[in-house]
Image (cartoon, rainbow, N blue to C red):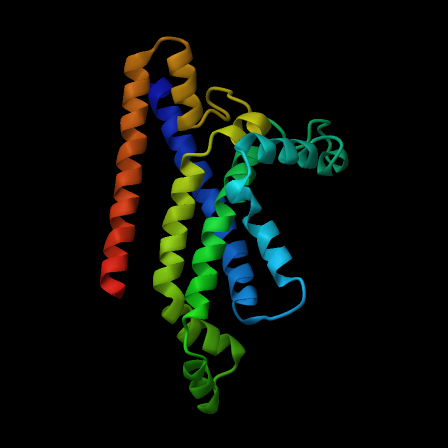
Length: 218
């Protein structure tokens, strides 16, 4: 198959991969912080963090359109369009919509850790970073890994928000979901079938890994 087939495939993997890196970093930090903190307004903040999971993608896309455009952070960029209709906009859209999945998984993983395990490590002279790397993260790893895989899948399948902020530019911002939509619109059903099969295989593999991971932690 030619570049017209593989371009959206590779671009989707790159966008989903970069989105997942952002999501893992921010989601893990937020989950760790929220897991054991009790403060006034916590439920409101958590509702805001989870909002992209329930909002329509077009609404999320519109919010990003305003944020990334010339009326938002784009005003400080040389290009008047800011980050809009670029590869970076697709990465940001994927990270925003997948963040709640990583956050929830991380928060649950940290909540299930017995605090006495961390306390024992400190009694043996471990500092905060050592406790985090050698005790906390390894114990929370199954939940974190599930969150990573789910976040990757969500970013890989993102359509609405990506279309609004990155467009559907072949070779530049056209990911697999956008390519499928474009192929169906133009009557290229065989190409659409091939891309759907790619997404199906990616999704099936990730879900199989998540199920295997869950079975090993029971």
